[in-house]
Image 1 (tube, one colour):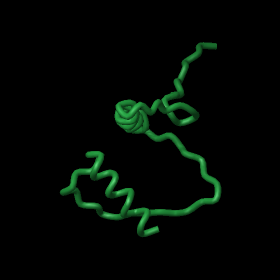
Image 2 (cartoon, rainbow, N blue to C red):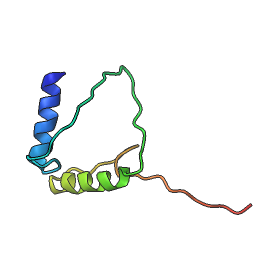
Image 3 (spheres, one colour):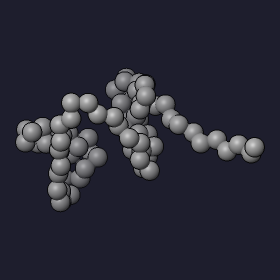
Image 4 (cartoon, one colour):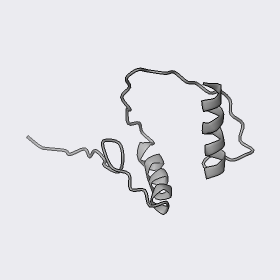
Amino acid sequence: MDELKRVVIDGLHRSGMLPRNATIATTWAKRLEYGYPVPYVERNMHMHAADAELRKLGIWSRGRFGSWKYAEIAVDL
């Protein structure tokens, strides 16, 4: 788990998503046999930034939590 944290933090630094001089207050990890990603308020902002970088590498994100988004639709009944 410590090696995984190191690799993830290094990747965040190398990608520019986490400045080298940033202070990491804490890390948390938990291994789950089965998990389900839950969208959150800033999801679209982060998804767009990650998607833009992946597309530069020729990787097009698709699937349940890839480039697809949910939309709220108001309906008057």
